[in-house]
Image 1 (cartoon, rainbow, N blue to C red):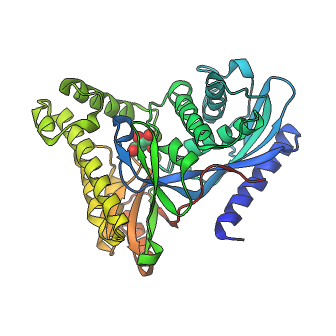
Image 2: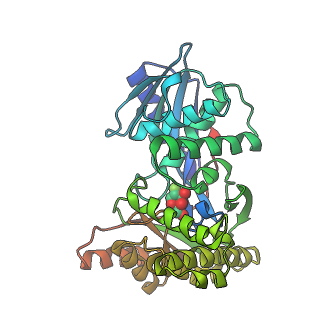
Image 3: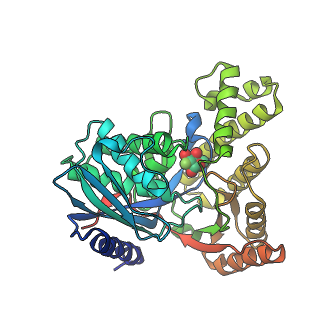
Length: 391
Ligand code: GAF
């Protein structure tokens, strides 16, 4: 059994035990979906840009039993997540709150998309850290979506997965109330193991990009600052509104279509800075993809560094903890480092030599300790599979 399977099966077993103890049900099946880390292309997915995330081997498992009536009962092994019960017709905006909003909201959005979702008992267990910028929410949505689609008799296909992506985005936007883009749901449902996924967020076209990290003697380290962030708060929505306004002033549908000259034409310094981030970040994604495809993954470090500076200075979504760990990782030999995800806490990544993990791990902990900040947790990550039926 691979290390991936150990964690995955542990979560699956926990979800099944939860289904038995809370709902007294035996599962018809167990489905899983991964968290993600984004290599590069941050805050561009709602601007029609390009991003390059990869699925993690950290997953959410959903154990599900189909019901003969229209009841939906949801529970989680997370002690802070209260069970939810509702009728199929009553899962839309305003029904479930908290964690259940992601799951019930996905079932609602699937019904809206014409999928004949049955009543069900569903229990989840996850080892994707919550609020760490590793997309625990999209992994929950994707696990629920793939399970419900199969229970509804839909055959798996790329087309079906694209439909599930859109449903999960709708759940998050309309039921949870977080106006996020679609990067996280797309990678959770369409990633390929061993590769990162280039996502063209304008039409959600995807292309796997093999990173070849191990062959280059490299590893990707995730540094979880353990400073929680929440996407439903005002900051994310404000950034999105800034981008919409910048695009409007430039007469563009997508801010990602702006040129450097367009950016210069913006008179409001804040909107100009937001646009400069979006335009430069898309260029960095293209450079990284070119380097990786040319077998030069060891050279992408400066792009990660520049992405961090842009997110910190122009997009203003970093946090002191993120800046400290990024700087410490670089000083300890990382080839590049940057914050990932929505920001304001959560995680950073560092591209490191395989032999350097201990030094970088120690350096980021020491740097935070010296400044009296919460000590981060590090893990090296590999690219896992997308949502799937486990048993
Ligand atoms: C969060 C959102 F959910 C994504 O859609 C994306 O915007 C990301 O922040 C920033 O790149 O993960």
